[in-house]
Image 1 (cartoon, helix red, strand yellow):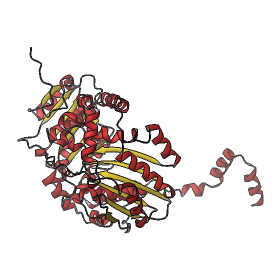
Image 2 (cartoon, helix red, strand yellow):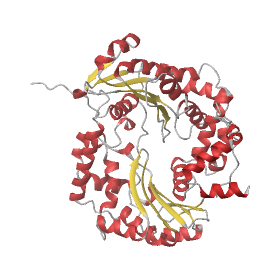
Image 3 (tube, helix red, strand yellow):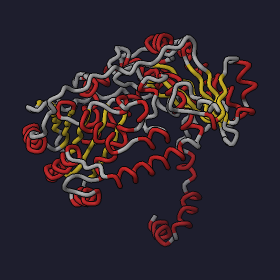
Length: 497
């Protein structure tokens, strides 16, 4: 044995590998064989997240604190309870531009000075708008949260919206839209929103259109900010290594003198989807498209719907790498690099969308497969061997999103925005686990029925249109040069002499 040990130490690594292979055949013979099927998902462990504490300041600002010690980090997010759904139709993209401009200069700091001040704190500052809300967030070490909140309050309350910054952002947005509107997938998503929601607010492009972005001027931005950025229309959430008492003290220090306007918050009509007698099948003919984007879309549910958990589990069965859409379209048939779906819940009913990109010649087949998989969910219960891991994916994604202070703050902010009880965080895992195969079948049949689902295909129409028309004779064909995303009609008006 001593001789063998000396020999092993004298061998070079590559020679050692050969030596071990020769002298240890029994060890290699016992190596585990790759498992044909993955192991079953383990039962999720119960977890208790800290309970948010809240207080409303005299000016109407709702402040929420979540204390979670352990990591010396704090995240803060200020939510304005309106977003793209309040953009005037002719000014789509206004909320998003306004949010982006907040960090581009205030009465006391230029855009460069804001960036340098946050960087000096070792933090990150960002702002954006989406459906139902606009947000500004900051993440820093807990010892730096005071100075960071001062900067956050400054950009929210005192932006200057300088003309040169507006023009710079306008050009960037137009450049981004030019790129997006050259891609079949982006076009399909914009068209689907118009097909599902028509001329209602949710039908507008959140980022605007080239025409609407060109119209927006400084007065529009200032007016939007004045109408909606106000303390009684805002929620401030702080979470991480911070006590509730300190969170409320800092909120009062930096936001307590934020004056509430005398006029009431604007009353707005909820963005309802427009009803159609029958679903639309819309083809955007883009002859230079190397691939076709295929999308099926319809209305889904809102965030407070009693079917919320049944809905997100049903969507998980369809979506993801091991979801039915990807299994059928990519893995079994090789028609796409991936097929996915989403059930987006908003203040009012949001969209359900399933989509894939494929070669132009197989676009009609993929459209049928997308609809077919959604319909199949309603015809038979999902086997436990399939449902259990898909519920595990939902639970895993939820838990992963709450690992950071920023993720916890975002989740609590969303619950506050939509008026959902904070207790849902600790009930989430149990609510997912109680969803049964029968629940999924009923949800798919009653809420995702193919009879009310629209189809959008963007690609080289001559490659797939004849086959598509065999299945859907009512198909509308719009050349991409005639596409108008500013209207539910989707077609530019003909010029008359």
